Image 1 (spheres, rainbow, N blue to C red):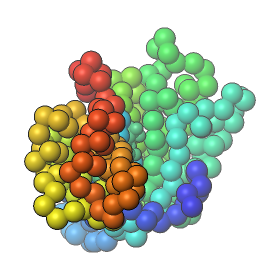
Image 2: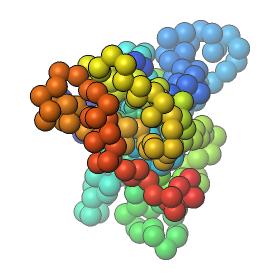
Image 3: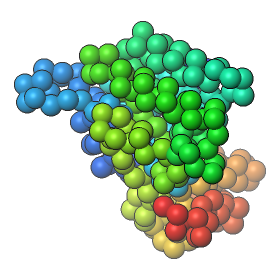
Amino acid sequence: IQREGFATVPGVTWADVGALNEIKDELHFAITLPIQQPERFKALGLNAATGVLLYGPPGCGKTLVAKAIANDCGANFISIKGPELLNKYVGESERSVRQLFTRARAASPCVLFFDELDALAPRRGGDSGNAASERVVNQLLTEMDGTDERSQVYLIATTNRPDIIDPALLRPGRLDKLLYVPLPKGPERVSIMETCLQKVPVQPGLDWRSTLASDACAGFSGADIAALVRECAVAALKSDSLAVGESHLKTALENTHPSVSRSDEQLY
Ligand code: ATP
């Protein structure tokens, strides 16, 4: 069970993550290596990254890779949704931010995961900003600057809108590594489907690979592919079948549509 704001080691592994090989490599260098072989970093005079910002359209695996990296290096994982930290009582949100970092340091090595950072830390002084979020951004900056590599706390934040995040958070020593997590293309959709089908029996001869690679699934996010697999399984169940076959895939495709609209795609 995952409780917001409390440390656990996540159950998600790299085997559950399809595609995204470059992201996996980058996170390996940014987080796994410094935790597992800090002496190699030190020998080359390298500082470990403080934080990574994953950005891109919804449902493409940002949360999934953050959990998998924590699992991979045996680190604790503390997850918090941006909007949940924004408390209307004066001073409450800053205190929550402070508490989170204290908890993360006590649970180190630890990945501190901020989902929907844009809600928490919009550009200060802008139209969308307000006094509460200004104070939160200032507190975040203070905590990030106080988090050096000896504390072994690694920040991963996500957003669908990197353009509205306060730029001070993205300076060196803070969330200084920006990684784009894109909508999957044909072969990547196949790879994601493979991970989603791990526990789902498929009838021999069902050629789901060419369907996934084709235009029939253009624009599908990872989350849409996971939904497609669920629809396949439901269709199989309804027809009293023990495995997913051609007709089930066809039915599932009729019920599943890309969740990121074409116009939203321009945003990323
Ligand atoms: P949001 O921006 O909405 O928070 P996200 O990018 O964090 O989205 P995830 O929560 O990681 O998206 O993905 C949602 C679900 O979609 C996952 O639980 C998983 O079932 C499926 N999924 C997404 N991307 C992948 C992937 N690369 N490999 C396997 N499954 C994926």
